[in-house]
Every structure is written in C-alpha cells, then in structure tokens.
Length: 303
Image (tube, rainbow, N blue to C red):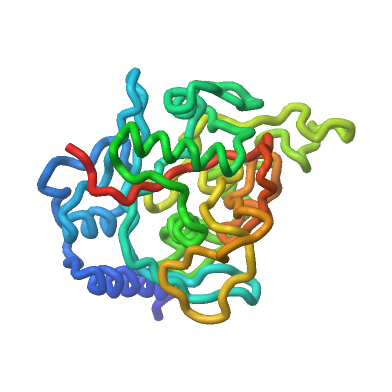
C-alpha cells in the first residue's frame, strides 16, 4: 500500500505537470534558454527555465549600477494562486511574467543610485533600512532612468506569489517551504536567531540590544531562487493597504487610495507569525529601522 508520503509526492508531480502544461511547456527536462547558460548564482527551478524558453527570454538578468555593482533578478512566470489566509483567501491570476530581485536592495546598491545610505545597521551587503515608501519608489525611478528598463516595487499580489513559490504547487502553506516554524532558521533572519523582540538576549529596556539586520543571501533561497523573503527587513510593496476583494481577481493593484502602503515579509526583530507568506502590515510612510524593499522589472532583458 502506498504511504501517505508517496501519495503527496505523486500529487506534487501531477500538480507540476498540470502547471507546465498550462504554460505550454514540456514535462521533459529542457536545456537552458538558447541565449546562454543559467548563471551560477541563479538558483532557479525547471519551471522557470521552461517558462523562459517559452517566451524567449533569459531566466535571469543583471542590472548594471556601475562601479562593479549590479542587481540580480530572476524570472517569475505567470500563473494562479490563492492569496491570503484565515478567511480572506481569494484566487489571484498573474497574467504577465516579471523579474524579481534575488535579494532585498543592499546598502551598496542603494548608495550607487541614491548617493546616500540612511541605514541604521551598516553593511555593504546588508539590506538598506530606514527607507520610506517614497524613498523606495524614488530609487526605482532613478534605477529605471539609469538602466533604461522599467523598474518598480512589486505589487502585493506579485510579492506573495513570488514568496510562496513551491507552496503554490503543494497548496498554500504558512511559509514558502511548508509549515514548520523550526525550519524557519534555515530560510530567515528573525527574532530567534537575530536578537529580536522575543529573544532571551534582549533587554526589556531596549528591544534591539544584540539584534540587527544581516547580509542578504546567507540563508536558503525559496524554490524560485529568492532569498530573505521571510524576515531580515520588511519589504515595501506598491499597493495602498486595504481590504482584499471578495472574489477572484486578475493582476490586482490594490485600493485606489489609503492611509498606508503595504509592507510584507517580516523582519529580524519579529517572530515566526509575522514572517508568514500571507502576513501583511500597514506601513506608515515615514522611515522605519526595519523597512527595506526589493525591486521587480517588467522590461525585456537587455544584451
């Protein structure tokens, strides 16, 4: 008799095959895109490679910021998923593939474009923090002008879709890798391993004693090659914060207005419940010591 684990494996394989078929891709392994091999730094899935082949673009690209600094992005293919949790779940369709930054924007990257570094926790490869939503969007504007490619903040739906990665095939789970809070240490910097709010090393007088943000890309990536989607710093999204729609939606942009923009992903100071894939926070527009961001690009890759 087949074990429950075997049944789940077969279900995951079947779900992947169905999704690949919907993308018009073969279920057989395929070669990397014809324009070159997948970069060694791009920890992408076969589905991402298949999707890149289908639409005729590289599965990864880099935006040159000058001075030997670049931003790396990987292709996130279009698809459907269940967004939200605990009664606010709703079906979302993402109709267009996009490229998402492999990591949160670092301080070196931010300085290369903006000429300043507002961060509380300094480090060349540490994510920039203490940035407002306006700071993040201004960075995207200047980066777009410099690279001649459209760069922006992700929509909230794009962010959650990219965060969930494998969980989209396996069914919605608390984290991109499953349900286990004990496994979160492998994927995220959060209170248990960063001296955060609930850490025993933290003084009741100053919740930040012993804790800080960490260099990007040190933990395991999710199934689509994205690092630190859980924890490290909260990430600004393009949307205004508001109630979710009640039914299925396509390429949602969020409310037309509101008092706050959306923050996603949790931070080094937060517990596991704040680092869930579906967790959302109404972010005040001023700068916050745990506020950062990552970018997406919808432009065709350059040479």
